[in-house]
Image (cartoon, rainbow, N blue to C red; front, side, top):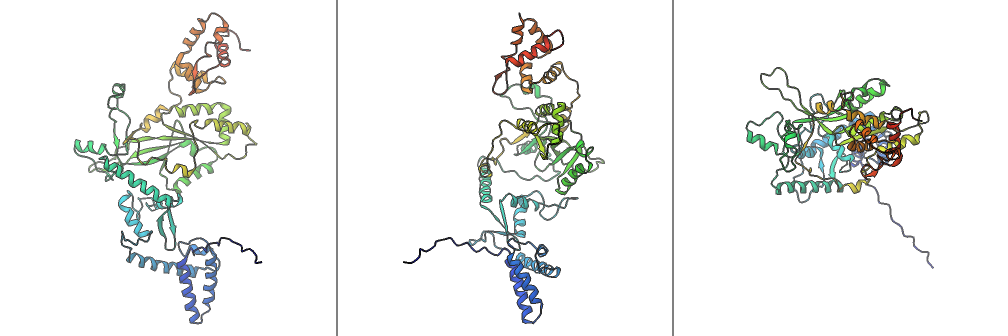
Amino acid sequence: MAAPRRLGRKKPVSACPNPLFVQWLTEWRDEAAEKGKKTQFVYQRALGSLRRYPLPLCSGHEAAILQHFGDWICRRLDERLERHRAEQEEAPSPPGSPHSRGFLMKSELQRAAQPLCDKSFTLGDPGNRYTAWASVGTLIRKELVLKTNVPARYSLTPQGLALAQRLVSAEQALISEGRAPESKTPQGTEPTHPAEEEKLCLEPHLLEGALGPQEGAAGGSGGQRPPDPEFVLRPGQFDIILCVDFIETMGGPAARKQDLLAELRRNAVPFDVRKLHVGDFLWVARERVQPRPGQLNLPPARELALDYVVERKRMADLCGSIIDGRFREQKFRLHRCGLCHPIYLLEESGSTQHLSLPESTLQQAATSTQNKTLVSCTKEESQGRCPLQPNSDSCTLMTFQEFNEGAVKNKAQTVREVFARQLMQISGVSGEKAAAILERYSTLASLLAAYSACPDPESRDKLLSTIKCGKLQRNLGPALSRTLSHLYCSPGPLS
């Protein structure tokens, strides 16, 4: 009886990741063998090392990491690669061919993408060595574009193709609704007629400045047109700048703080160091100011604060801020700063054995800081959830000056604000609970008057227990109500 035949799946033979380099090294080895030169053995050893390497190489210089690849072979590969690229550029593939290759070379991709991009793919801005081509690396890291072979071939991945189809559908929807897709406006050009000004203000993705002084008069009615902004920044008329608080660059470990600025420069992040009254990092949209004939000095660029502010903490800083009470105050001020997306960034969560608080306390503080509406999803689940079209044609932002002045810590305070700060010093009183108490008793005098009107101590202890607070509208509770009653109604020292 014959033995049962084993069934299995054959492992597919992987394609060579560097076919051109293998081809050229083989040709050079054969030529050297025909002439009886000993360099044939050098090429043979390099060829064997290259065939064992599983990743694609973009240049001969990169091949220097392999065994048996010296400077001479690497330089010869680079020269041959340059000739090959020149031959490819002289005979580009016809666009729209029925037998499309399914990929583009670098030069072809640059020519096709340049009309759709604000920046040049070949020349960087003055003082900046980066070009628009750097964005292709981001697409590759996000697995939207696939880079293969030598010289490089660029093609869309299935995820990139799906995103491209959604972008086309979104653009067609805008056209069908009678709204032209966003077009680039030349820098420095200004409309000369009111009609042209009105037309440009209807473009999508506008950044509107702070509302004018008529906000109070026009903003009361829900059906009225919103008040006109002080100014409008259209696409191409502003740059996004990262504002770094000057405290992040001085004091403490100097080397660590200087590394921050060096890393920002290395990644070509435009930034500005200034004093921030709340947060450590903030993004602003800065107006591009163009020189005008006969103007000696440029006018100051107007700035709008974007809706993201970051408070950065290391584990040791978090421990210190919890002990001295700054932790709750900073979170409260972040929520009250007027920006929609405050971020509390906790980094370097390494060893905590030498800190004053146990690690469980620090982890609990980090967990309680997270937004309670935060949901989790995988990368695949989030692909179809991000809207490609903005919810509105424009967004209204406050100026940086208004944001920073409104966040000043030691400004003149009202009686209500002082009462709120006093309440938050009591153990168990959060910002939400203090706000709920202030809604019923806006000042300490009104609360004391309510206590005086109570007929007996028991009713004073229960006075605040039924106040609703928080998103779930839970009662303040008898324990906290009794604590506040003893604090404000005890004639002598508290026991």
